Image (cartoon, rainbow over all chains, first blue to last red; front, side):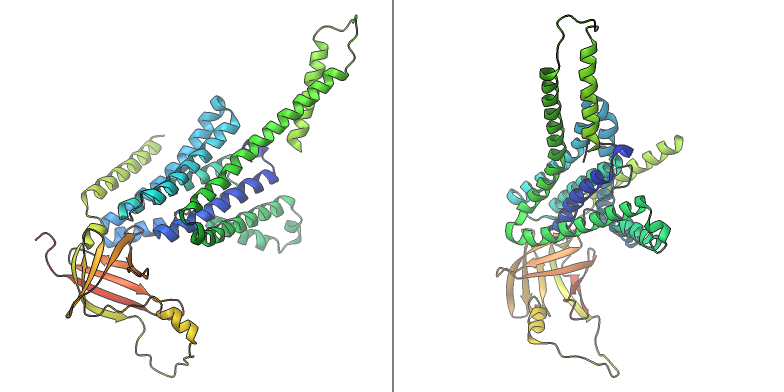
Amino acid sequence: MLRKYSNYRNFVDNIQLGGLTAFSAGMVNVMSVIVFFAFTSNVTGHYAILAQEIAKGNWYEASIALIWISLFFFGNFTSNMLIIHGTSRLGQHLAHALPVMLEIACLIFVGIYLQYFYIETLQETEILVGAMLFAMGLQNGLTASISNFSVKTTHLTGLTTDLGILFSMFTKKEYRENKALVQKAQLLIVIMCCYMAGGIVSGVVYYSIDYYTFYVASLVLCVVILYDYYKLNVTKMIFKAMRLSEVETSPVPEKSNVPPNTRELHTLNKIHQTSQYAQET
Amino acid sequence: MRIIWVVQGLLATMILTSACLLIQLESPEELLVGEWEELSWEYEKVNHQGNSNYSAIDEAQKREIIQNLILHESEIWQFEPNKRLTFISANGRKESLSWHVKGRGNILELRHDDERIEEYQVQQLSEDLLVIHFNFDLQVKGIVKMTFKRMNNKNA
């Protein structure tokens, strides 16, 4: 889900990443509306509010709207910065996982704060909504960045527009038979359904487990990180096992004319071929 | 390249200005504290004319609609800094409950001690004037607009 970048990602990678992150974004958005009466996964409404409050001369409310928009912006900024600067130092998987880790930290902070310290002041509301907007910015920046802008999971405005356009294109046979367009539509539908499902689950679950719902959203994000970690480990184990069996089964000539490094090269080639196969599958 | 720096500088200035404004200005929560006297109640839809075809609502709908409907006419609303709100009518103190401001300062939530919750949208809030809207449930068309004026000068 996370370890591949840009054009190296396939359809399944994007579906998995889009589905899970959209689910958590839906959860976070509904939670913030229930608890704080403010949207946190999309900023279109905040732009409208900013304009409206400036027009009314309500400078306090306008400032809040501007800072919230800025926090979403900084979330996107931080996410992409971690990816482009971190990949060479930390490796691709860790650099891609860092924004998700930060997002989890933000959500857990909000959950813990609500559970133990919240006394329902306006200032607390503003800060906690800001933290959630930053978290959503991180997530949106990550998914958009690593998927070459094809996966955006925190808001459905652009997605609904794209779906409308795609569905109108499907009224022509030649587009219906275009695999790339069909996959694009499938991806968008999955994101839309997962976002809705996350919102519904969050709304239902909140009334029974209260602020723990934030931890559930964090758990969903943990799956995003750990899935790749698990896959990498499994792939490593497969390589190791194949390497061992290769060493055990290959006959070693007592006196050979083969240069000393040829056998090692042969084993390395085998491993390389296996790794390519594992990546493709 | 220079344009990028200009835009970034503009953005940073706007954010810093916003932060300064937030520190300097009174928040809606602070503005609310004090005594507010009800000036008027206005309904969005009243005095229907013509041959409107009204359909009767059943008991369940009626119960749902009136569930959180509380009338606060001819009252003084006294918002205290400790988040307690007292309704004072001509007959004296009526009820005390807790109040909270949510969202970006646009939602006023009143929580009665028996767990009933009323939610109002703050439409206008200044030193002297408070306008709040009480949204009915979707089944009932109409918004109640309540206007208040501050009784005493806040800084007095």
